[in-house]
Image (cartoon, rainbow, N blue to C red):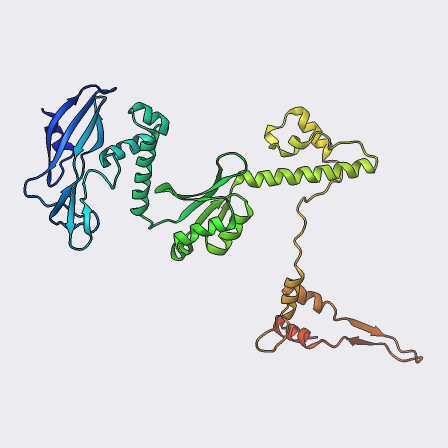
Length: 380
């Protein structure tokens, strides 16, 4: 089977034919050159609008690198025609095997991009005797094609994370699709700021953002802020590693505080060297650690490392200003209402006049208290 026959099987080009095939002498590496020419009476295609038009002239011959055969470098030789296009003017013709002014054929670029998924770009360049720039161009072409033809439907779960690149604190924000049926990289942005993640949601679209069901991320504050604003309906799953890191830090702070307080009160330093003792699972404790933990629990230490939540002054003012629509009464929580009803008292009065009988006096309920008693069905 001749080489031209193989090429017509793997890369048959419409309106073009393969011509002379020759071995190139004097090259550093084994090289084959294949002439390409347009079919007789064919008209060149405008690279601007895609319409065919009459030929204007020809440019000097160019070489286009093709996929190597058996380790032998292969080049297409072709002198591009220029088209007299009625719409675009004089333009270089569109060549189906290459894009723009690149010297790589599209087939070779896809070949390199495929290998770049398995090896480093440097290793791909060394293996196929090409340059790192050619590998970079091939990967760039594949990524641009993929972005243009990306299917964006049925995305229900995404993951957001950052990765450090270059030296120093320089980061990239990465967004992945993590659905069971599809796991892939969706978007990359420079830095890890609020503005960065807002850029992803603008690209992703409002409708898709509102349809997200799950979002997984770490506890980086800019991420938390943007997710709450742009995808508040989704269930936000926090990274367990960061939760445990914050928990460990809180335990260390409480342990240090308790140790200082015990030392000030004159107790022995029971909390010294107990960090991993408090963090370990009970089943992972050694016999010595179990005994030390038992002794530690005898002391009256703080029971809760988390301070109770307190309402802000603004939230308190807002709650105090809320009123009912029908009666225009202040809105009470059930707990506040019970505390208000507890102020109703029954007093037994003994008059100072001798011989006067005692009598009971009930506090007159306020309007709100009476309304609550009516709703509860209680009569005083």
